[in-house]
Length: 387
Ligand SMILES: Nc1nc2c(ncn2[C@@H]2O[C@H](COP(=O)(O)OP(=O)(O)OP(=O)(O)O)[C@@H](O)[C@H]2O)c(=O)[nH]1
Ligand SMILES: [Mg+2]
Image (tube, rainbow, N blue to C red; front, top):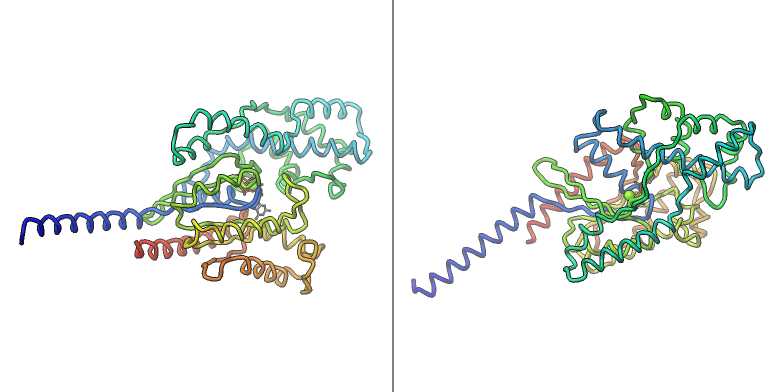
């Protein structure tokens, strides 16, 4: 063989070697991107991964969640106090009114609008500092963005006294009349567990941890190793104004997991009260599934919050969201219709796997996660084969 021929052969072997290495690397690592509107269940899904495939939530490490739980309780209580005034409900005891004023003064409800405007300021400053960096460097910067409001532990004695006031209980019983803001299901869960939560030696249960509501504001990346495969799972913020950041993660993604809050069919977005939650999900799903960067990326769709959806459908038709719906008012019929709506919004060629889920249900999620992992492994093998 001539000298030139040998060099060409060596070059070709080196390219083959590089391809093998790339394929091997790709086969060993997958990147999952969690998308969906605010409160649709993305971060709760990560907690389930942590529970079933991470180190779980050992009791010794659960205390850090107490702060978030007390925050959810206080936020719920302050809303009840605010609405009490609007609904003209009187306190049973005069001293409770004073406690209420103190609690609301020390722990005002921070609206999403305020959080977002503070974030926009922080982000502008961070981006300015990063002006000369490449796009790829943006994600760690965003992950570091944090609100700098210090946490103040609420007085649990005071919380208990307020909660036990007959007037406050009357306001809580009238919570379906609250407007414009409503108590979240999680706030109700924690308020009803208030005696347990305010005990000195309280340790959050796994169920408590799953019920915590803490909006994601930046980008969180979690890594899990399952059956020798590394899963990099990226959890982003679902608020409308923060969705423009989603695209930064589209390129390297193995599969997109898209979360939909089924029970949002009669709700509006917190950040845009003219927009129905489920319609917004459909629109966002349409945009993501048609995005050209994701043309060849499979999607796993989670029609989540099934528990709340089933309860709601019994009382309220999905016609609030889909005026053309003529089917029966049963969870099964309504679910089928909603599923079809999503299928109609995806490009014909795209593979979309669908799961109807309840992200706070440990047992259900164990089975769902296991089948999701099977799907991801299959997608990964297919993609690696196409390198
Ligand atoms: N009942 C019920 N609650 C759920 C379910 N999934 C999530 N939640 C609760 O809904 C709230 C919001 O869930 P998150 O996982 O924080 O939502 P997210 O998609 O991460 O929201 P952002 O970070 O704002 O984008 C939390 O309090 C969860 O406990 C579900 O299937 N059923
Ligand atoms: Mg989140």
